[in-house]
Length: 496
Image (tube, rainbow, N blue to C red; front, side, top):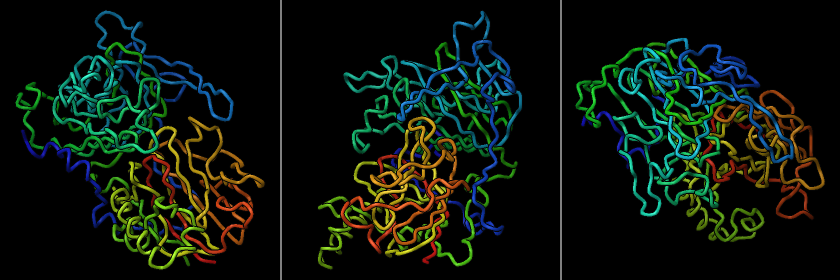
């Protein structure tokens, strides 16, 4: 097998790449904006199949989403409806437009033993995209009984046939066993897959640049392949000819296999012909506003110089415990916390990435803060994902999936009991999209803007650790672990 093809399992697990040096030097020099504009456009309008063509086995369905705030919201999704498939229908639905280089984001839900696929640079809905397109990226209920024998822990398919795989060529990562914190292993379908169970929504981001492909599923990089130089004559791992493997452009599409699969929030960002995989996010590294100190702007060294680990061992996540400890004890526990930091926080694609795995915990500024102003970009990368900001060591400015789970916006002071705890409005973008916080803390009062919208207006932050005391006058700022993969960037702080 061509070794350029696959990033081996061990290497992929440790992969923590960042933007190239050239990209890292590219700073946004415009006036600092209240919002992040990424340039994605929708591929599904939520009403009909405008912009798509091909199989009749697809349509728009209305589903109900039950939120934790007690409301039920109806929304339209794109669905594969196999009962509508006519004889001779190949089951492929393609975009009318053809694409070269792009980033694609979408959410999908699998039924039990469901099967579908994502066609990349496909010439027509009447051909098999896995061979005549550049490739098919598999979509599967990986842990379903048709594909995995749970009783003996044995896969029934080839490694290159599971979700995220470049079908027949590059296998996806399949090592998600016993890694998740706080019982979140139960969310996943099984067999080491990063796909969630049937009936649960997944978030996927696919990057196609030249002949390189990266697939991120629920926040995890599960596939990284380079097809350059790979022969098309049948010497690939599956032994099949792939005449379309080096297609330069083509349609994107869903490849039906007779199962009721659903999608929503499908959006795409086109990239130029000369784009490079390490530079797919131009201007993601911003220049700090005047008077602000840079805590993270993409430089890997900042993880060690500007941030320290937080550990729950011996309750050392509690500021009162830390403050009461001797200097020797604090140093001992900080060493443990920093080891956890180094194992679970990485710089990935120029972003500060937390893997959410067992053994990992929050990240804190190396210095304590009194009154301050903060700018920070963040994104959650899994449906029902959760995170937050601890201000002066206390929880928290909330980050969560407002659209699929709570029906309440991020930014609220979640642990307040006497004072307001909820955001004034939902200003969150969809899961997988970048958001921008602007936070000002003076004394006990906190104001929060999310994507330019005021969501917390000068509210007292209560002391979660001791309800009889006011919030600590000076303490560290923390990026919260809540057992979900998250990314952060452009973190700037000004002490007031």
